Length: 340
Image 1 (spheres, rainbow, N blue to C red):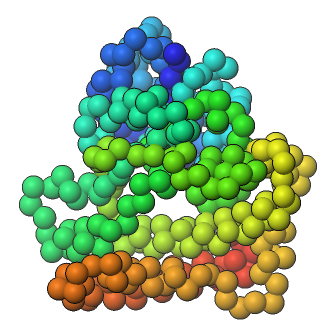
Image 2 (spheres, rainbow, N blue to C red):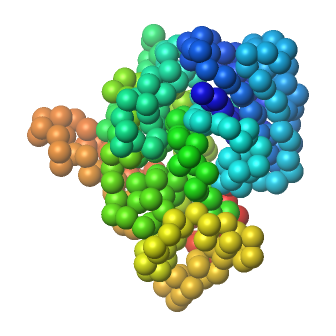
């Protein structure tokens, strides 16, 4: 079996080296498989590629049991990078893809091995998503702000939602899929494609599964990073919803992947056109649930815990106003399709 580990990186010079060193410690590489590690450095203005090459040589040595290479391109966009890696760059005989972000830290040395085990042990599954938690969990002494941040994110996990920072995906499934270019994020659309067999079948949650224990950490956002992330989520949610509605309306009888590829190639501005058409004369299109999503979990909590969490949830909802309003303005101006 050939396992291709793909790291999609953009301006990750500060994190790519430690991430590759951490990756090399995974027990997966002791398994009797063949491996290739690809770093796809797209639209980088820093030294991501150079640091990646040095880290690959230091961690995996010369070409041997683990083949490795760095691909550099001036083209931007994670979806475009994903399409290129799957269909043009990775070895044609890849059996399983493992996609990793360049800034994660693994929570345990068998994290990727478990993803592959679950993928093989569950015939209904096409992908196994990682279970990520904030790096603040690993801090021995937490500040008040650390605890606030952890409290606001502790109820956010969805076990059947693909997490784009780490997941294993059947190569046979991946090769059927092309992602829309451009679109903020890839995981929501990819998850929908997998669960519906390219919008030809009803949604099947069991096609994306996850382990019960955390697999990796991600760096807690700064305030500016939080606003950027939440704006990206708002943009992606609206645009993803419109694209999915468009595809379902076509009543497809064959997988949507080839159609997406055709739209990307022949009508590169198809997403911008869709935004303008769906936006029309409306002033507001971002779902109101995004404004109040931090309050929603309170309804499922015991009363005592809900009372304690209420001030935190209100504070997070107020903070969320800025990125959500900004996202709505960008959609109105049809700028969102270019968002990274």
